[in-house]
Length: 465
View 1 (cartoon, rainbow, N blue to C red):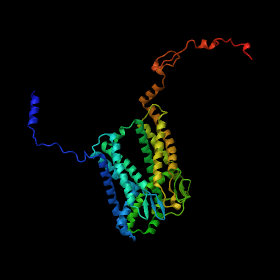
View 2: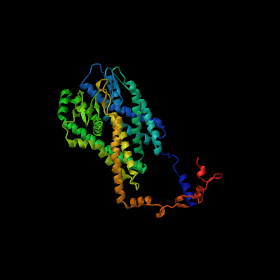
View 3: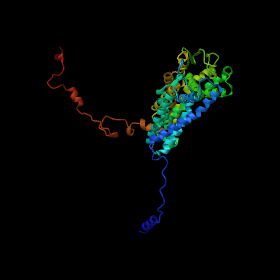
View 4: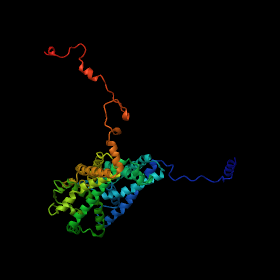
């Protein structure tokens, strides 16, 4: 009674003018409105970042007929190119080999936008993450489509379907990952996955890391070996100070493309730079190249390459598979030795899918003439990567898991328990209820087989025709 009275007095003596805490700004706002605001902020920020670069290029190399509206239109086209949207140039054809490095700009902005949508929307459940990603991706795709329509001119026109689709997919992936990171740290999100799925993801990440590192070393080594040709091309262009800085930025944007091409080179199928051309470990046949300094890294032929370099290049996908298999066996060891290689091969299949998409986006047409075929084949790279990485990962995972079972007493005991017969004795053909199974025997089965059917005589000479 005393406590109730004291509580009542505290409530009665409370200040009547004390207001409730103010609501969080945007908490009552619909999620779609929040996503639209974030999509607009990403688009405006991206255009503000790219417009000064276009203005600098316009000042350094002015062109007649290109005023400030043309500068804004060019910046808009560059923003769409960062989403890997193809363009159709008047008199030249389709331009689809775009720098993958530019994707980092909208990807980073959409990552931040996804985190902002989750925080402002006060989402706390992982099941609500899909709604937040869609709330960002749908208006962002609409904005990309509107920019594609607004930036069209008689000289260049971006693809409207690709603009909408690329904007939607990039916002869905980057914004979804940013929103997931806002909900919980990566180790906690990674721990929510099943053990086998977590092992496959870890092995795939390891294989991709080895392939990307090897591809970067291969591309950088080839460029260093052809440094003289690179300097000759750069001197021929004479871009000047501002033009040289912009040219360096453009070449940095094409670094991911070069890494993807180097990976496909190590896989075996290689890539093409024009019709009837090929660059592969078995040989290289190239035609005239555009005057772009970074293309000096392309090998003119396979002669002059040391044998140990060729062996190391061809061993790169198998090394990636071995790393993936070891990671799978360490992440989720199993007493069933024969099951682990399947998960290692699954890493190879997942790696092949990623490499196929990477290869497909790293190339593209450069007009409607001889350079209409540039870059590696996506399906060939995916198939070869899945086989090479998958087989080596399966073998490595099986061996690593077998060694782990031999060294770990708990896993060895579990495997022995699974292989041993029930209760340590061989099974017998009798009525049994062991392990919940019952076997029924017919004691008259043998007599029924020996007796002839009713109404028929026993077999004898009279039965012969």
